[in-house]
Length: 356
Image (cartoon, rainbow, N blue to C red; front, side, top):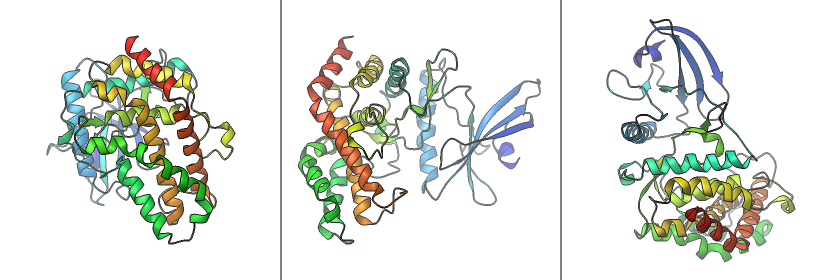
């Protein structure tokens, strides 16, 4: 009740449900009966501040981005985070817990999907999100996770840890170390160019998975992109690359049988068509020409993070068995290898999507 009062939700409490999607924050659907008798629902979240160390900066980023979208696109479904009487879109309660409240959107999500129309709609959703913010200066946002997708620095850190070999695990990953070493220059090119100012500073989502798009229950059309906790300044191409890395992988991220791991070009075509239908006029030619390289780069980046975690004691990613991070590394490297092998075809699909 303290939270609802602070955010000035109208009416009287009616019911609540715990939403179990997501492993970080505590999320509830809370319904109120308004004075008119109409039932209205909200999403109430308690943020895990052990994971999100700077929640106020996250909420400042979210406020700037969602306000911009609502003002520019008033007739579209958008996220709205409610404010307290003090004008803040968050609340610390008496236990120092961090809360926020947003509008509830009746919808469905897809954790994974093989339906090409839905994949295309997912691409359209993330492309539309990027296009909505194409005139927003991304540099004003807080970089809440410094160098999150700085592939160049990620690889430097990996090879510093390879040189240190503190746990003596290098011998278990000789082939993986050699492979990433051979990819090091190519994978680091885009982040180095970004640091040199070759690409615009965009608003990036940084978690472009299909389950972060809400879809209409009946039409399966995209409604709105959600989960803006990692919104930061960055490269638009990396949002695209991370999305296809996840969607186009034919296997799980920790599939031990590498014969099952490849990059699905049909899914890539579907996502690419949807994405570029929205952003082909707002991205630069350099950005569009770098989309396939971005998919390769971010896949190598994730492989390097898994391998680095394995070499330094498995302290970041949760592991279910010894060598789990090494299995994840191999899976990503197999995917990166297939992206390289199909590079010409993938770039042709990008060109086709631009024309279509």
